Length: 472
Ligand SMILES: [Fe+2]
Ligand SMILES: [Fe+2]
Image 1 (cartoon, rainbow, N blue to C red):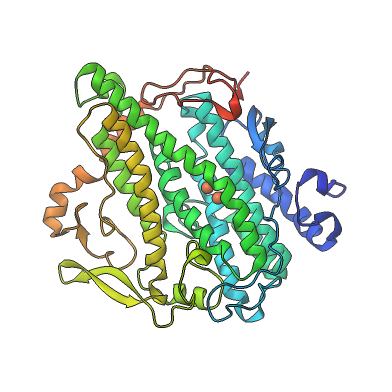
Image 2 (tube, helix red, strand yellow):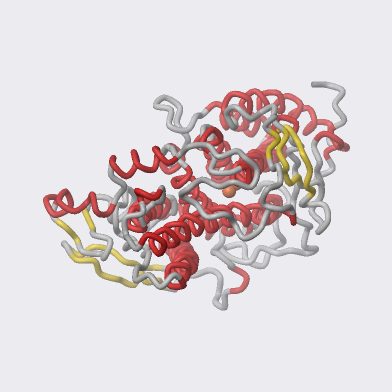
């Protein structure tokens, strides 16, 4: 790939043109990335022109340029948010010291692990979603899927940039390993559980972008506070893109809710299946599943790792600098829900090892706001039903509740009680078969599948019947 004009080919604000060593590392990695994209990126649409947003700079005009592009020709760029002059570390043992512009030697291994774990989720979600194109409910949704996919690809670039620029040879090895693991692969799986689950249909996809991408938002928000300034600046720019992924999830589920309500009203029934819709109760089961899997991504309620990341100044709290306390938390406590026999109880725990739980609490509050907006749609249709987030202890695989069965209301159950009720709480095989049966592609511009309402407006001011992906 020698001879490429990298400033042209890889839009960036990291001075790539002046850094020969970094250029060489990326020259070596880029063809491997493209091979991975062709093998594991969106299946079947690589040659189609898609109306995509590309970031070519971080300012207001540059970060969202729209135009037709074939995905393998997408210009995956490397962007850091603008530096804050004189930025200082705002928490932990190094609070008040100038933010690090180089990797602090004593934290090198920990920091690399944090970056690799974040980086691994980016290609994983592209792999999970690669077969969705062939069942898209509309060209609008197909385009939004591909937008999310190319941006997750860009997030991989963002992490690989950090590894290549700051971690020398081990960084380059990790960059390669990021392209070698595969979502759901038994021998070389992705690092985190939720990223090895299947995303078999569009309902799962919308739930994933609402719940699982939102975990990403909170992890990035914690890393955006990092004392390692290049990581902080990288994550701050990624968060601007992540907002679109949240939008796809929230409006996607919201449109399924809306369609269900319209069909319920029109046909005066709760069972909208004969009319090609997805029941609200079925939606609730999907919600329960994706929420629980995503809660697990925050890790154990009590975690020495979380305490160390904070004390070392590597990962802060959500909106760390807006909090009014000592930002060291050595003597502070935090309320954590745990188990006492077969009862769920809250306890005051030392704040530092409770930081995962604290981030999870911020996440839960954010999820609740989205659920409230869905419930408003239901209410506006005069329907007496509410979607609910299940209890945080429901269906968990990691942490204090991993070994107990808990109802969505938060009651600890016997195994027999769980078995008797679980089909009411989690997607059944029948649910999955039903959702699968609805997944027929709708690719005529301006048309939408039976189970989802059209969005109120198109992308970037374009009409709903715009040709968002040119299939011809
Ligand atoms: Fe991402
Ligand atoms: Fe995302």
